Image: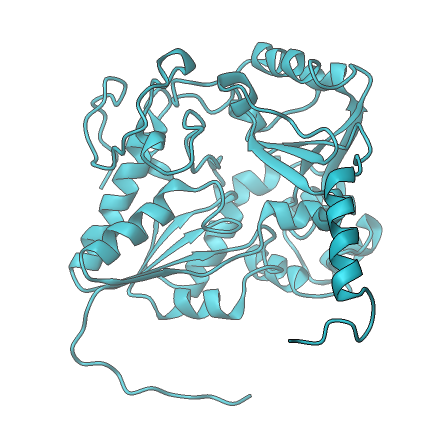
Amino acid sequence: MTVLAVNPDDSRQGSIACVGMGITLGSHLTPLARSHIETADVVFAALSDHLVELWLRRLNAEVRSLQPYYRPGKSRMKTYREWVELMMTEVRANKRVCAVFYGHPGIFAWSPHKVIEVARAEGYRAHMEPGISAEDCLYADLGIDPGRVGCQHLEASQPLFFERQLDTTSQVILWQLGVVGDRSLGRFLTPDAYRELLTERLCEDYPSDHEVIVYRAPTLPIDGPYIQRMVLRDLPRAEFTGHETLVLPPLHALKPNARMRARLDALDAIHGAGAGSATPA
Amino acid sequence: MRDTVELLEAIGRDATLRHASREELAKVLLAANASAGLRELASGGDSTTLTKELGLEHMHVEHTSQTGGHEGDGHDDHHHHHPDHDHDHGKDDKPAQRPDDGADTPPA
């Protein structure tokens, strides 16, 4: 293996890298994210499994868990703002900071985006490294290719809080089922009645016997994915731990766009269609 | 007894073990002198013993607000966002005390 070295920068300036730990312990951490972790002065951690946090502590002894800032009944937005301030305090102290989040640090995570914005506004180096997300695992485990009919990803509460149009010709994927309908931001699992209300809303667009999938990606490499198929009306009786995602497969076939196809016919008549016809002017 | 975290990392990065059957995994863990808790979890899914062995605690996984609903993080700061009052499209990025913030302070 080739090892390269850079001259250490004596004029220390604080920086932050937000990286993803991936979902499954030992399987998903990228070499670059690992390097950020191992070379940081301080590592903040918001992970999904205590065992993964224990693993992280093997990579860097200066790990500070962000978990203790959660409290039942306390708005999570307050917690997330506290996280940003904790991280920025170290950046301002000219530390090389790494913030580690499970999955991808930029997906369904407020504080990584925010801390990068704040750090840059104050003149510090800040960036994000992608990680393998639960969405990535879902595609692999359920055999879904988002390029085929498309995927509409929504936080599960949005169809309840807002007039969202569900695209029933695509895969509709709803995240954070465990806290669906919680406007207090102080709960970690809403009662089943909230998922009953979501089911009622979904039944406005889908028949109650439409087959849906409740999915959970494995955090430990000794586990497989949790995949439970059921009809939509049975959703409230599914097992929920707070980590689940709902997949609604397409109800309708894609409808051809006759108007645009006619326009494409006209363009093909001018420019040709097929190999060798796209010669630049 | 082998270190549980090391064993899990080794399984996670090994193509022959990551998708091994429970029976195969049980044999490997026994041969590797894995802890009783890890062997129990790997074979039957019960984490009680492993939780005691390592003092494991439940982790919260919600890292974003679900009461937003608009693009842009300004709305994620709105705790009591109600569709009926959906007129405020302004940014609100400054941390501020909110009615539901509570007075509790996390440990340092």
